[in-house]
Image 1: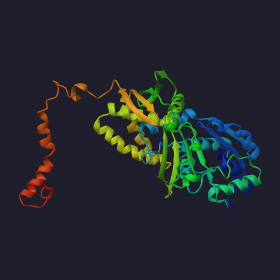
Image 2: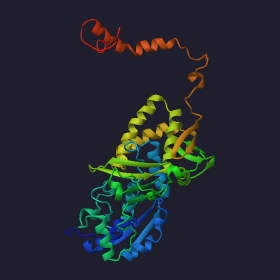
Image 3: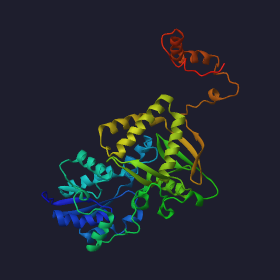
Image 4: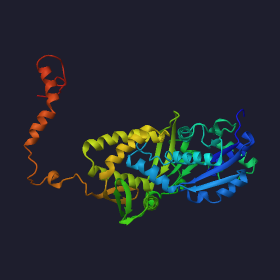
Length: 415
């Protein structure tokens, strides 16, 4: 390598990629390697991680609990924005990367490191998410992306590399799914999923049961929000991490939150991913229902436009950008009235709306009722329709006057 690094902070998960990157960095860059693992809800995956990193060649392994920051600073803002990528994906991996990369940069500065590294492939989105964060927060750091440099071409090659160097791994050539787990979701890629015609194997799923095996009795739950943020489940006040954890268990029990998506990656190709997001799905559905009750038509419709752009920014790794900050300011301003509760009925993979209420509700039963009322004069609708339909009328009059053909002449009425 023409460029050398003295000390590298590696975003470390203990999985196949980052396990072999530690010895690779030492061999090819001659650098001291500090492994950094962020606890964002991986659970048992963190067990024995420090020992494994040291045994593999890291000088130290830093593990930090970032679950609160993950939910409060990344998951909930994305939820409040209503951001869903390509109609299905709740962005659990996408907004995890900026958090990890942000802390990685901070640790590099604290440890006097001159480089950062990640285990993302050159085909994926995560390389962009990590590196845009590095550029935004400290562009002076050298970025080492082994997948763009080494001769390893496949996960099978990685396994051979690990076995040659006696690096302990859990991946095998038989079970070769690439998985990413955090408190918000669990994603699955690779293996038979690379064939979009192949149905996912049931034993692949971890957070959710199949709808067929879900309870035969429905369960009602109530989620309470304040300023667009969830604050309670079934009347019990909980911290954000507890809320997501609780709803993951409830949703998973009823087979809620499975997504099978062929998505458009940022780098230009299509890929197929299967996601399990039980708690996040419940929160998204409930939050949308409360917005339908409390936001006026123009604001709700405009927010839906911004939601797609927000999702695109997050998916593309553009978390630390002026546009996202500006969009957050708009979203924060309209979430003030998204306060209240939503009742959901869960049954075999389905989420059924059972009720919603808010002190800021814009719904007026005396206006919406089909029964007799004294607040709505139905005769006034005639004037509204005349004005609203005026452009249509003018178009037809042009035709009648022989000025030009319009839709009036295209009618196909039989007389």
